[in-house]
Length: 193
Image 1 (cartoon, rainbow, N blue to C red):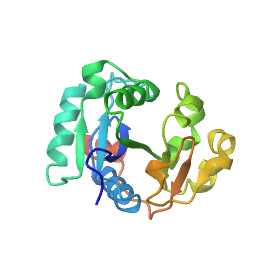
Image 2 (image 1 turned 90 degrees about the horizontal axis):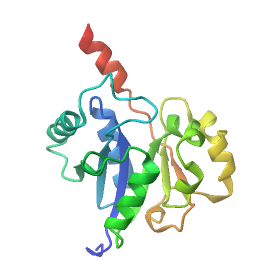
Image 3 (image 1 turned 90 degrees about the vertical axis):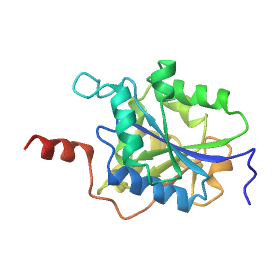
């Protein structure tokens, strides 16, 4: 039984514009494969790479995500970026680790994000903050594993296992799952038609 004072928590960040079954699928895969206690969805207040001018306000996206995951007891929707006015993943993770020093966190990203991870704010330091779990997305496994960030931290790549949440950073793993077809951009496109 897990120690209630040392939870194992997966962090999945994004715009969630809108939240969809693909987000839930990724969360379920990480939750099960890594024996996590919870998954936190961090809804971005100001998305550094996408901007927010084209999307609903953060509080609306948070409420939508909460409604969408109402039946998923292991998923918790966080408003930390809204309440603390953070937008960069590095800053948000640093804050979370300060607020919850006894818990074990892993950052969950899609393979598409690993391809561009080296463009993220303080990306190398982010690797040293917590273990990172890269979830297969589409046909991006090969290109993501050839990315600048993957090559830079290749010697720290581990096999996906329940040990990942307690790895000493900069450990990371690739979670090779059958990709889910849902995407926020496709859902938005269908809503316009």
